[in-house]
Image 1 (spheres, rainbow, N blue to C red):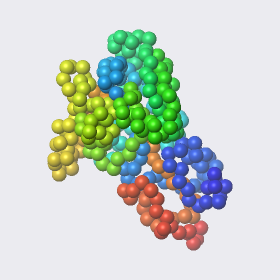
Image 2 (image 1 turned 45 degrees about the vertical axis):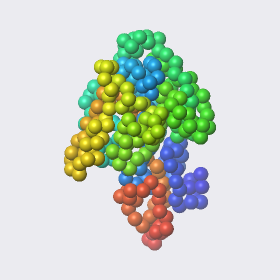
Image 3 (image 1 turned 60 degrees about the horizontal axis):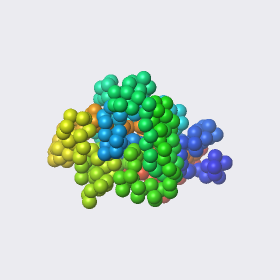
Image 4 (image 1 turned 90 degrees about the vertical axis):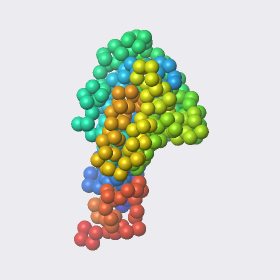
Length: 301
């Protein structure tokens, strides 16, 4: 509000869509700059594949088809960026739209979602119960997703809890789904933290693998599915082209198995007046905050 009134020349709004939209409307000449390279908030919904009926691939596919990215675009406005894989497209190894086969894009299709639920034995849908953080960063995407899935009979009956309680509950493996924003600076770290079997939340080596990918049969063919071997190849080579190929291969595999589904990503924003120069090129800086010690007012503004 102080920035809109003119009391401040620089402000930070983070990922607050309502403020970003209001600043764009009321201060049209403001410069809206996003955080440095690789520091965005990618949002995925992680499916706990040890929690029926999410152990069935057809159910997870149905939920992917029931997800309407246009609803996220409409709500988040300038903070919405499309995500095509489980590594954001701006990060080395992230999938671009052209990298993803048509059938793995899971374009919004309610009839296809309903048919997959019928095939899985849930023609009338089902109820998922759990908890969600009271923080808007987590709660808003969750509520949007709940509205989308309700259209195919899937009800999210989730209790809103304080953020500390939520962080504890999801690490205790209590939730059937986890909508989670989590930036990482490198593609292989996304794999290590969210999808490697060592990172499963029930293990001593736990990080943030909420889906149990790497310890379960995700495809339904009777064998355990994992990206662990691909990960070892990625970190075991210094050939950047090979690394990129393997990172993309791992994500294509996971779009088939669906331990998680990419929703969107958004940047952290810092609006500033046109007469302010930061004194450095923030877009080329691999940090997720702004330095103001070199900022100055343009003399000829």
